[in-house]
Length: 342
Image (cartoon, rainbow, N blue to C red):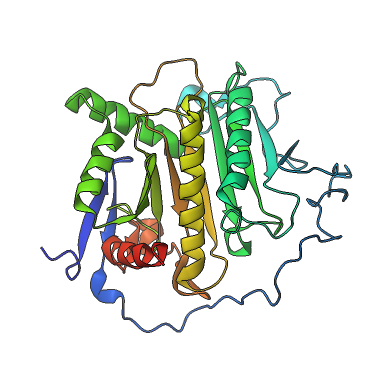
């Protein structure tokens, strides 16, 4: 089998799901939708931005003149913490089932500057953000009702960001969501069958092969995973076996900040535009149970495919069958690795 020529499918061991890879389709012509680029660069401060310091948010609350990161409860939260628990299962047949989901939703502005993104921040500035993430994970994860804390960033209008001011969100839930629940089951199964950690072994393998490696430092590695679905998808893993940011030493904060800077600034070089993506940290559940099988990691899912205006869509066979990609992870990694070193 020729991985860069023949159609084949690859297994994602973190979720036990498959992705179809069709390298021969990478040169197909494109007459589909293209996205318009922003006409102008963002200013340092925008008087109409509801996340800038001193401005009034859409919910009517005025922001303080914050000097660094700024955390607040989402004015239009998807979750509530003050509702009664309940469950619906008509006729007890598990056909029409619903249950309440308690939780908290918060927003974190990375900086008072309206145009300062992770890719343009200095590593020491990102360290402040990492410490804020850690504090929020500790605070929310300690709540009895919270069993999972999801920190994520949607960058760019293409990814549904409702405001260009660089920020991320935290959704803390009483249940463990679908994606981390699959990863938990697969990591647990791998640990039981092999006696080792799935991502520790994967990091060791990728570090040896260096084919899909994008960049690395003493604390973290960034790779285009062998099973990547999105064109320039990146997986960031800690070298040490860590479950969450709560286990970070000071050097881990520094190393993660450096690797986030390198990944995001490299993305911006791919098509010479601010690269859109959804990024999130997968950390061990906060359900009060020990999870020695869990390994700290982050996913970057960027949609851009061929240019700054052409994105990949999950449609047709991908919605009804299985995800599919054209350019191989190896080709994507080679391109990112070259840009990361420039």
